[in-house]
Image (cartoon, rainbow, N blue to C red):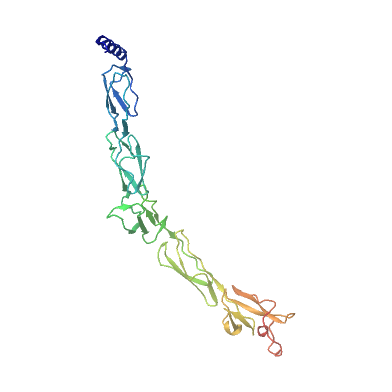
Length: 345
């Protein structure tokens, strides 16, 4: 039987042994704080873990008491970041992010033709909300297009009621006798303004000169302006080299200044030629002369190969150079074969 004295003595020794033990400073947990925080704790003292702002606890205990053993219990507490609402979609724009957790920041950009109505970035706060509030991408608008001086608005159809949006267009035209310099169409840009406006200027042209052997008609006005027209003609046996009607251009000159060219007299009495792809008798086709610019092809003989070929001739201001290879036979030389009647080479 154990003596009561021995039991009391053993209990005393244990008490003395345990009484000297203290708990060390508790382990650090990510994103958590300990209250109170000391270098050591007496048995029976309590500590409380709490998550830092922006973090919430998950699993494990939060309150611990220093035991007589001087060893803190295993702590399985975890502090995880708060998660802000999903913000990965921005209509007509782009959201750039890594995660939506505290304290991350997300940024915003809008597509071309839209602008940020709000902040360009937002941060997930300690409370799990975005700050500032999320923006929207609003369409870029342009004011009504200004009409240039001496011009009228030919076409303009805003996309939204009376409001012009990005890439909307407007078309201008100048008043009569005013010439446009620049593009007649302007566009609403991504910056909310219009592309460069055209300019309408009054343009004058000099009175057109009468061509030699011809005449010119134009409006009976003291000044000839842009888009005014003049018509040219030639006297008999002369042909117009150029258009019959010309116009005053925006550069202050005439679109063309025709001249009158003489017709060619046909000195050949008998010849079959190619004209516009057909065989014709030159003395019949051009009995009134050949007009300036007309072309015909004469038939010539290749004596060595006993075949025929053609060479072209053109009437140039009264002169027709007949190819040297062409031979005109006398009407008395009935036995000779004309080149046009010989097989082609």
